[in-house]
Length: 489
Image (cartoon, rainbow, N blue to C red; front, side):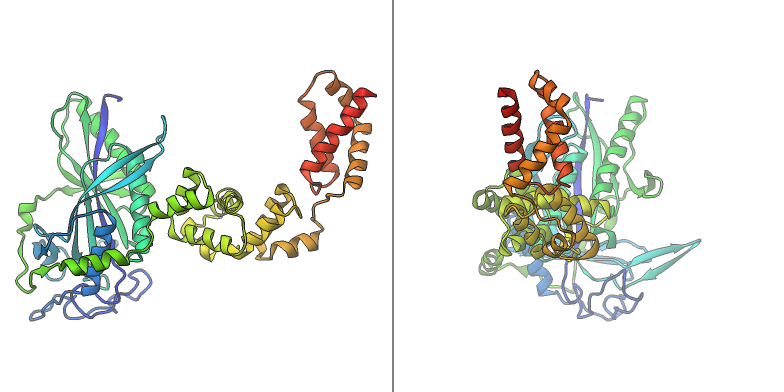
């Protein structure tokens, strides 16, 4: 198997968060929450005699993405008709872009953590990003299909990579990086479960002796980045097994069966010629003013890579911690809100990446929902300041955070109500340490005889006697002092 590797190019379809559709004033609604066919008009239904009008805001959003992906913006782009017939496409063609796209020749750098081996950085090239209109949505009920045209005509940006991705881990890293960029730009919320962001890998395999690409297949409409990972793994294994058995791979469109966690062949793939592309006669050629392009470039917000570098240099965070914090815009904002509320940067990062994320994972809360979680950034900052200020220790802090998460109460209120404040009085602590040593004289003798690991056990007994409220550093120092005194005695 090590003689083979996957070759993957990704197609990403991102709905743009405009107020109206790509070619009409019809409002854009949540295609999952809204009642079917309540946000439609003559244009999105493809009724005869209607004329499309380009949504300038959608053009601006697409331009923002192209610039954020380090693309070249051609001086001219043009819309085309892509002809195919399907129930969710009312006109019988889709208005898209073909040979004159919005943006070309970009790149994104990704950080990859493979299953084996060391982490590395890789550049993934972007072939193009082009605008089009989304289709409607089909719901299959038994032998019948219901169609909802609310989504028909919603602005859609298709981003196509070069086949530079050579593992499922790289595809996952790219997917997360691209979703973060879209979220930071404010053009797409990244909610793949609702279909506003869909990723479709084109997959082939390459043997170490190959001099040309082999036949590829495409997996359509994956609804999570994790499923992108799983689909690439499964299809790579399927193709290698076919070749090793003397078979061949046919160009086809595949689907991912979520319930069975397996791929299914949907249809054999069409070629570009079968779509019969030709320039859209009802829309003008769009000239991209260099002044407008630069104006949009200057308006771009701080993007993930720039924010990560700032977190590293300004706050002293590690590259890994800063990368994880910046992966979701909501997480990065939560972190900065916690700092604004007085938390120390490294402490806030440690509590977020450790205990807070652990609680979110336990309860199935997505990281990009951290801003709406029961523990606000200001509440976390209150806890961080209590721990850093010595009022409670880290172990108690973890207990307090769990109660904050489950009840919504504040850290200081929980500490006061349950009497969890850390004991730092040396006199009181010394008495407890002495009692523990007296009650475990044999263990002390063994420790003094060279069994150094027993120190940890004695420390644990002291903290248990103090009900976890003793200042660990002071208890450690007192324990060492009293044991040394017994040694010399």
